[in-house]
Length: 570
Image 1 (cartoon, rainbow, N blue to C red):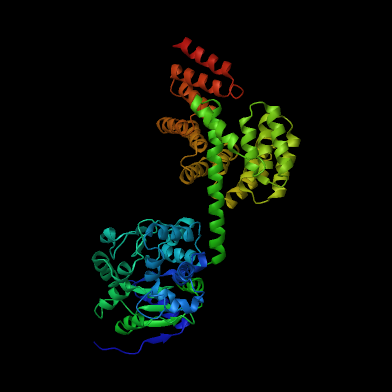
Image 2: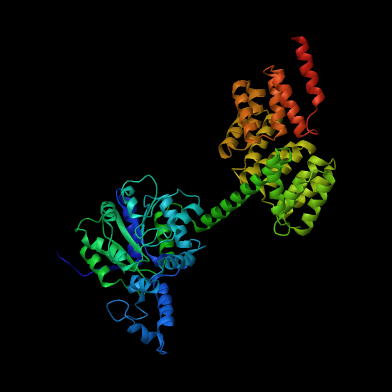
C-alpha cells in the first residue's frame, strides 16, 4: 500500500472545495463525523475534561501519601504507558473503567448529569440548517448526547432517524428519506459504550453499514479526537477507494490528530484543516452551502416558532377552561385544576385564565384590572381586556381606548390588530380603515387563522368579493385545520353564498367536533338544519343545547317561532 504525507489546506480552501463539490457533484454528499469537541460550546464537557475530573477522584481516593496529582497520575497504573493529565483523553475508557469499577451505573448517571438540560450551540443549529436545506443529511457520532436531533426539533426541521444501538445498524442505508444520526457508541440511555473493549472494537453491523455509507458520502470530521479504536480501526480497515472523495479532518490549534488518525488520512488521501472551532466552522460552511443563508433570519424564525408554540399552548389551555364551564364533572374538575395551578404573579396569562374562569361579569372585569395593575405593559393582557369589554359592555369609546393602548404597547401585535379591525368594522363602520388593519395583521402573521377568517368575512359582507373570501377561508383551514371557528365560518359561507349544502353540513359537524362547547357553532348549525335542510327536530335539539351553553348569545324565541311556523305549514 502506497502512502504519502498528509496534505493540509487552509480553511478558505477547504470551504471553497466543499462548495464546488456541493454545486457540481450532485451524486456526492458529506457525512459529518462528530466527537465530544463539537458539543463543548453546548456546555457538555469533553472526554479530556471528564477524564481529568475522574483522575482527580481517583487521586482523592487512592493517594494516601500526599503525592501531587501530576506525579501520582504518572504511576497510577491506568493504561499501558506513563499517563499525563494533558493526554488523559487518550486513555478515557481505561480511566472510566477504573473510576467506576464495581458500579458502572454510577458512571452512566454521571454522564447523564453532565448532559442534562444542555441546549444545542450555534454550531448545531447551523448544522441543522445544512441538514434541512441540502442533501448532506448524515451525522456519524461517538457522542451520547442528542444535540443534533434537538437542534432539528428546535428549528422545526425534519426529524432524523436516530440509530442508537448496533442492533439497529441494518437501518443505515446510503439512500435515506430523512436525516440520519448514527450513534456508534450508543445512546446515553442505552448503556453507552465506555469500556476499553467496547471503545476499541466496532460491532460487525456498524462496520458493514458505515462501509456502504462512505462509498457515497465524504466524511467531514469535526470535534473528534480519534482516540477510540473502533471508528479509527474501521476506517483504517477500508480499502483505498472505499471512501467517496477526500476525507476532511478538522482540528483546532494545539490539538493535532493522533498518529492513528494521520495513518487513516494518509491511506485515504485525506485532508487536514485547522479551524477556530466547531461553531465557527459550521457558520462558514452554512454560508457556503445554504441558499439565502441568513443567521438573523434563523434567529427570528426560531423566536417566532417559540412564540407560536407558546401561543398554541395558551390557546389550548384557555379552550380547556372555557369548555369545562359547561362540561361534565370531570371536565369541570380539569378546568378547576388548571385555574388553581396558575400563579398570578408569574404571568399575564395567569390573569387571563382566572378572568375566563369567572362567570360574574363585574368580577371578571375586576380580575382583568388587577392583572393589568400587575402587568401594565403586557399587550396580550390589555388586548384580552379590550376584547372582553367589546363583548360585555356597550361603552365603545372605552373599548377603543383600551384597544389603542394595547397597540401602543406593541404596534406589531397581529392578534390585537385583527381584533381592533373587527371592532372598527362592527362598531365604527369605517371599512377602509378596517381593511387596512386586517391586511396588516395578516402581513405580520400569515398563519393567524382567526385574522384570515375575519378578513374573509369582511370581504363577503362589505366588498362582495366571494372568490377572494373563499381563497382566504381555505387558507385559514390550511394553516390551522383544528380551528373550529374558522371551519364554521367557511361552512356558513358555503351554505349562504355557494349553496353547497353537503360540504357545509360536513364542515358544521367538523367544527362542533373540534369545539363541542361552542354555542356559536352549534347555534349556526341548528339554523342551517332548520333553514336549509328543514330538519326541524334536530335543529330544535341543537338550538336548545346552544342556548343552554350560552343563553345570552341566541334569541331562542325567534328560532322556535320559525320552527313552529314551518311545522304548521307541513
